[in-house]
Image (cartoon, rainbow over all chains, first blue to last red):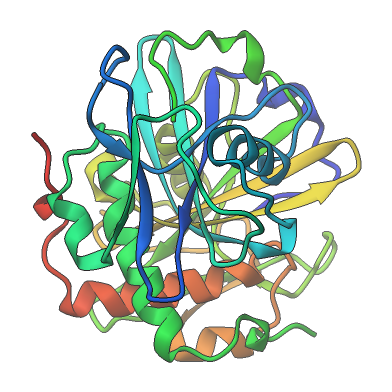
Length: 159
Length: 159
C-alpha cells in the first residue's frame, strides 16, 4: 500500500485537511457547536475543530483547535480516529478527519461559536449541519455503537 | 469548523495522504493483498491502495491504484469512507484513508502483490499486517457491522 521510502515531493497537491472532534460525555452525548450567524453556514451545527497548520500533525492541530474554540485541554492519547469525509471544492479537495474524544480537562465553553449542545447520537441527524459534516454522522454513529460492545482496540494481530 | 474562503497556502505541510480500499464481496468478505517478500513488511497482509499523486482527489487516486494493483474498474460513487489512521514518521505525517468498496467491474488479480485472500471481517485481526493498517481493522468492522442494520446514508438532516 505504501513504502516508508516514499518521498514527500508527491504530496503537495491541493488537499486541504481539516480535523474535527466528537466530544462524547459520560452519558454518551455528543457536543455540537453552532456557527456564528454572520459566517458561512451561520446558525448550523458542526463538530468543533479546524485547519491543520503547516507542519502540524492532525492530532496537534485538533488539540490546539479544541483549546481555542472550547477552552479545554485534550491529550493526544484521547483522540480516537472515527471517520472521514471528502468534498471537492474549486481547485482543492477538502478532507475532514473526525476523532472521538471521551476525556478532557476543563468545561467546554463556546469561545468562537454561538452555542453548544449535547446531543444523543441518534438525534444528531435532525440538526441542520454544513454539508461537509453530514456524512460524518453515520460513521460516528457506527463507531460509537461498536464501542459499546467491541473488544478493545489492542486486539488486532501483529506478528 | 472551516470556511470556504480558506486559502490553500496553509496546507502544504508534510502530510502524506494514502488511500486504501476494503473490497467487500457478496458474502461480506474483505480482500487483503500480501506484500511482496522483497519489500518492506514483506509477506504481511494489507488493504490495496497507494499514494495520492499531485492534484489528484483521494477518490481518483484510489480508482487508479485499484486498476493498477488489482485490474478492476471502480466508479467514484462506489467509494464509501469508512475510517482513517495517522502515523508520525520522521519529518512527515502519514494519513491513511480507508474506503469500503462493494461494487466493481472485473475480477481482482494480484498484479503487484504476491497473493490475495478474501477474509471474514472477524478474522482480519488474525492476519499479520503492516502497523499502519492495524488500527483500520476495528473501524472497518464497526462500519460493516453498522451497514447491516443502519438506515440509509441519506437520512442525515439538512435544512
